Image (tube, rainbow over all chains, first blue to last red):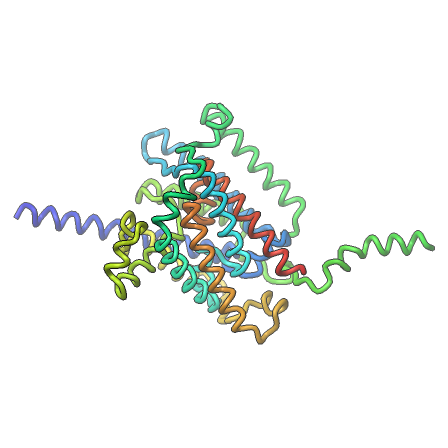
Length: 190
Length: 194
């Protein structure tokens, strides 16, 4: 009886959690499309340095997200989710990802946005993303013991690198990023 | 007179060099200000952290989907794989998040009159022609494979590293996102400018 109630409660909490995933996902997809990053020419245009929309969206998200998440973290309201810095994996994985990004012209999140707005070619990317994920899983035992061990530095934040107090770094970095956005706005067509 | 010709030549040089290169600026821009959209994504990140204890991310959803499919066809083999032992495939937060992002984008495009209903993007057609569907299938698939492989090795994609990791000032994410754009810009410029 007791365990029944407990399992029912767990089930309800899981359902609630997943409902939030749906709500947040809807908002994310909506924003990506409104931001133009479901459009093939805007994504490829960024890689060709013709259209700076992608960087503008990302840097704005970083500034606002950083200020809020670290404030909430300081108040004990949120946990940070820091992944280990693994030089080999971050560099090699990032470059491989970049080559794939240049080929398809969408990234994993914007693939969803592209499909939602009716770019049917995003479907080929989704099949590829799933195939690539499975291929990674096939190789994961080997990668885990090779590439993913190279240059493992543990959990490091930018302020740790320069030995500046976190709050000070965030204030300075936010100002720097906003300045970068102002320069971008001044010197780019879009 | 020779001076004038010289000036004309120098002024025209960038156009000459970029002759035939498609230009993203000839096509439509974003519906909303990129700064507004970015700021709202930043606010969304506060909520995913505070309510769901999750950073925004996209690539692992495809890994979950692939694992679920793999279990359907080869259950034992899929479950024996190192990655799926650590990350058992299920209908999880990330998969629902990305799945409903498709619907969210649909709503945005519908309300903004931006439904495209096309297989080939116009920019792609400008470079590869209107009959290049087979090429697009192959390149799109290969691009997807490389992105998934790269994202899993690097530990995230343009969302997980590019937004969520960078906003947490994670060194791993800043390295990964710089490499993503460096690799992407290198290959894209080779493909579209040569």
